[in-house]
Length: 443
Image (tube, rainbow, N blue to C red; front, top):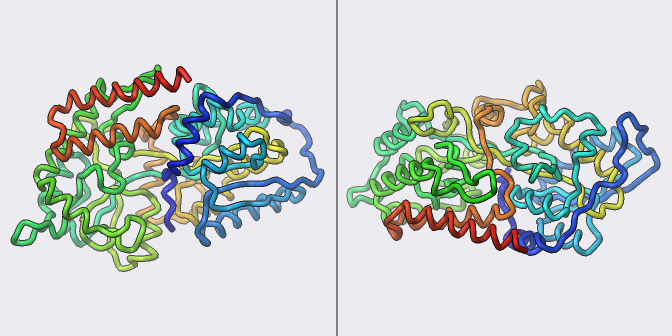
């Protein structure tokens, strides 16, 4: 099943940016007090979600079956294949769903800052929900400015996939220097120098090799406490991009680009890792399910991402993000909506049901330990990364998508040789991000 939870709708992000200066805030009405008797009057609530494939929709309906059994007086009407822009328009138009699910953690800061989604802190307090059931890193992408307006529902974690046949007995690398050395050892070229098999493709333009996923390999940070950019001031970014450029130069940028452009679609059976064109690749936990469906004979393994040689303590950690769910402003049945949100985000059986079907990581620590959770060695890698206290995320930021795009463009210019001065390039990234932040704050 293809379910990379971080993919964002560009139109939705544009609407988020435009709404940041216009929407107001609103507290959650009807918050039940601790120990209150649930309202058992029949009620129908609406829920919008982004699942679209038949297998995904079925998995979600299977999880809802448990809710309907537990809360028979609540009828849940779902609408599939919803994008963030539709949610935003519905809230601004005064006709939102009662519950909305988003695959886009980039939206969280605006959801919270503008009050597009209701503050869930009163619900958590009234229900005495212990947030220690979630890894601490989850708070960074489900809260903004101290306010939690969404809850996590499933997670993505990123690690290293390796082809055991192409590895020729080598163990997966644990450091960046080991990754570079092994990449060179395993790369196969035709007599004319054309790349036939790459040990690893270091290009930042290669599928999941984007800065949000590779930054944790060196412990890089994105922002300072005041929200301004830390890209130029944190030496980890320079360390990562220098390492990456050295390996790109070893291949030859043009040669590597010609090889990359022969690859099939990332989320199809023609993915180059599944076709044996690369020995090692950065990818999310969902790749396990895709391999099981489309490359059953592939003999592969998984491991945490290699880390900076001077930061061995980071090994075993990785990047985490995921699906978020909440109650939009103006929801007609907020109390029943909270019952559904709470169930889908804290009920162990519900999370395990979803994880087993979708092969995403369940987002609570108790669900990780459930005997009902389907595990094998390759999926366990991602469960361990999720639970690792050194794992990190991209903290919620009002300009999250812009910040990522700005650094990505700079990294592309650097690896291609179009940019010659890395210090100046990163300083320019800071300048652009900080100017955008001033404009947003001034709106």
